[in-house]
Length: 259
Image 1 (cartoon, rainbow, N blue to C red):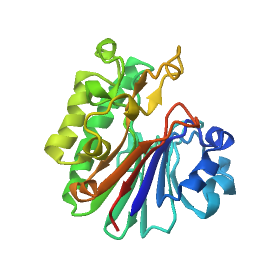
Image 2: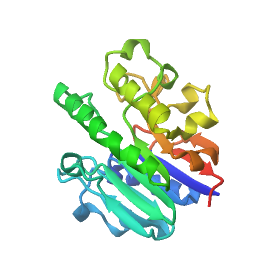
Image 3: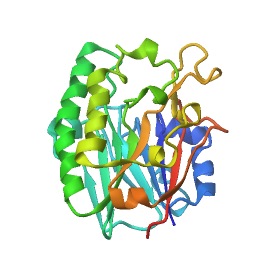
């Protein structure tokens, strides 16, 4: 069994103070993909780099206190790739890939467009350049699990207030159509939805800090495991952990009957 966790930490140092790594140690996962480190290499202490015997592999943003991705793995990967070959977004630390045999595990942090029109345009640029990369991964013959914060709720079932968000970043028609292309045309798999095609509120992974979103469970499902069909078909169990809060996101764990 292969157990993989995806978690947007909204600051690795902040999440550490809230007990994330103690929780992680109890999960006994094979790989833990994290996003939004908000840290540079100089900020990473040994307990953040190699917690509990895990090996850490990171892609830091050039801008301080911003973005960044990482993968913690029980065993050393055969290869680590930082960035997907696009200078603009590689400078933002949005992609790290670890290869284990014929399996590639990727942590990705797709841009948010909610802060300004400029960032939404950047998000569209990311979508345009990342899609060919996803197509290449699908065609590579490797099994792939892409974990991360995609910053898009794909369908109406994926957020509580879908009617009020049709014109908002994260649920725009162009963004949703892009996700549909990934699944229906590129041929990748939404592993959580494969296991739970009908659940809504149990699947939310992010809640706004505004208002009473967490208290009222006004959430969005924007964190995914996107996989190639082989490993996607091996997904057996999925869970969103909400008993403790390490950030404004909740960790998504999926277990695969895959070796």
